[in-house]
Length: 457
Image 1 (cartoon, rainbow, N blue to C red):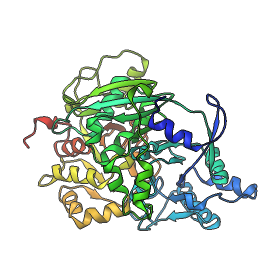
Image 2 (image 1 turned 45 degrees about the horizontal axis):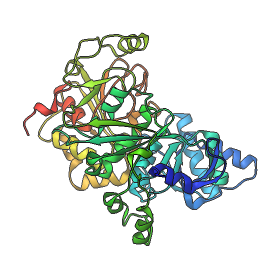
Image 3 (image 1 turned 180 degrees about the vertical axis):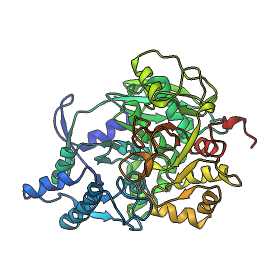
Image 4 (image 1 turned 60 degrees about the vertical axis):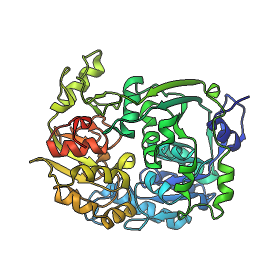
């Protein structure tokens, strides 16, 4: 009987439990950050427990860290969470990329960067965008604080196996269209709940031709379509990416021989398959307050069909029939676990080079990790951003979410490379418009979105 890649990884990790019921599965990698771990560690302390496998646990600070003057944390809750993680990591012997550490960064950026993320693994973290790591051919998903404690204590987690969905992505991307547009296009067409109850696998010639960074963008936002995980079959691109990294297997050839088994036998193994042709795909921009409220840049915003649409239009300050090119962009954010990698910064810098951001517009550039920041500076990307009028900042989650000093002001329309455009996501009253790094860069220059396909090469 044919199996999906997800089935094969899951089956290798089941410790006990019957199919169709909650099963206890083994966890290969547990990632931690300062927001969802304090109560979990306190639970261990109260019950006189240790961390079961410190060698399979890794922590960093990312959500609360300032991106200017990083050690000057003004918010008491943020400072307490960061201090607490530092103390907990020391007490329990957990590896920590702390404030200012060379490995510090957004947890879903540094996991792959350090070679911690590998094919065939089960990976968990107290954060919904853990799905990012599925780009390596792993099962990766977010968990709650009580589950964080359970994994710390036992290196296992109870889960009910989801159904499987194949997302067949095929064709050649037009110029000016990127991985971010693919996942936004899928969610816009299928809805924010199309993946509920499923583990999704992206496959097809478009996926095979993608870099690891592009694949991570797709899997990162699978959660925005309701899927528990987003995965991609590991291939030579995957193996080449992992090879030589800090925590990569010492015997990489032996590891690759093991990883190569993780592939879906055939499409018939999926419980459901959807098809997505990218040949005529356009750049996407969100108009509303969830990632599914998005349209191609050259199409008008939809008519109001329900109360959710009405509330979204009221909050965002736009009207049906308008276009993304009419949105008055006054803020631009480059960063997040979706698009804060070096390749994303290169794309944005390429568009900004020789230009200046629009008058009255504020732009923040926040690398996904300290390593990315340093590499970007080595090749002069920081100078391009600064010359264009952008602020070049320290790594962290920053303005992806309003949990640190980097807030977008109320009423301001922000072009953002992040993953969520919920009400108040980037700060109380802020108005977020998700797009690719290239689209955000162009919007920063013009003060509104443009259709990149129509620009001269």
